[in-house]
Length: 443
Ligand code: HEC
Image (cartoon, protein in one colour):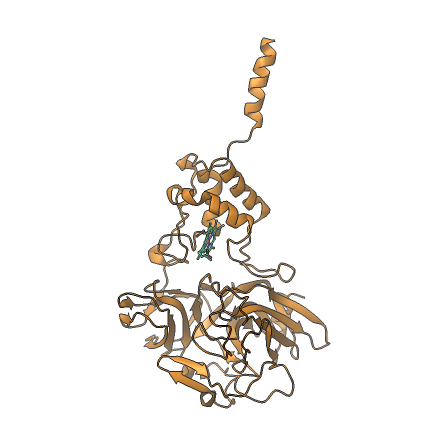
């Protein structure tokens, strides 16, 4: 009998797994999956770096991961594989759930993994070169603005960069930032598919620091229609910028073996969207960190920006379609997609129609959310042959059912303001030689 009792006492102890703790089990997941946003002075409302800050959020963390609201990720899992896929694995979700269900214990702080180091606020380490907007810029309360700052790089020779990270100077007002090479410098890169296009300016209205399309500009919702008029940027593409800072977007870290070129004497242009906040004047000094490539890449990395400036979304329309196509003039490898719309953006799909007529979906975002401006980086570059067409189809919900809709009674056209709309896609790509395509391409 004595023996039997001790056996019972002994068994459960050895069979019950150790409780799931913050330090040992949960912190590694949070550090890997959450703290790029959930750390002090970043975009998320609370830090998840230490137990004390994370503990009060335990129930809310459980719910947000079970419902897959966090981390933010919007690609339809039926299409494509993405290297920055933010979705947690079932195992990670189970871990968080069992931690919270077990009373969210801290465990032994000695078990904590090393806290990720965000050196001076840089996510990907200390940059080789930092360039800022050149002034302490005053942001007045109460209105949105787009400000442009052109600054010298003072580069005596051209440089290849393998990454660029934008650091907003004042997160309270900096909504998003683009860093572009000034157009004159682009010309030297043999690019500019946009060179022969008619000027867009005649179709635009500029008011203070904001631009929008004139209400009486021609309307083209379907730029893929072969009979669509030849208006600026409905065909070809605009050469994309160097780097971007957008809510939820990781820094521009280019794939291994690729790099972007900044010519000698180049100037950078910062385009900063300052969001309206009430209260006193704010100051901002945003900068970009550049990370040099060890050697020139075999193939330079480029970005094509596809836009339709000429759509018109009727008042109240629940699912208004706007399209844009691009037919490739060279064999190309596609690397990533960044869709951009505003509050009325509902969904967006990227289909590739091959020269032989077969069609495949490369990315579908069925529930677009303006609060998140994510980049979808293809795990394997998609090889596109000359003559294939990329079809971008977006839908806008201008009805009262769209909770984010600022005004369903308005007809909407292109405009800088978040209350107007955009239809933009940035697509990173390589134009390699046929031989290197055979080595790196997907098929
Ligand atoms: C890309 C940035 C980002 C990542 C990555 C991210 N979050 Fe968030 N999270 C936010 C932001 C911004 C908010 C506030 C806005 C919102 O709720 O949408 C938020 C909100 C939350 C909330 C809700 C807070 C509330 O007010 O109720 C929880 C809980 C949460 N996050 C947990 C997590 C967890 C757990 C992870 C990792 C598994 C994670 N988040 C990853 C940016 C992020």
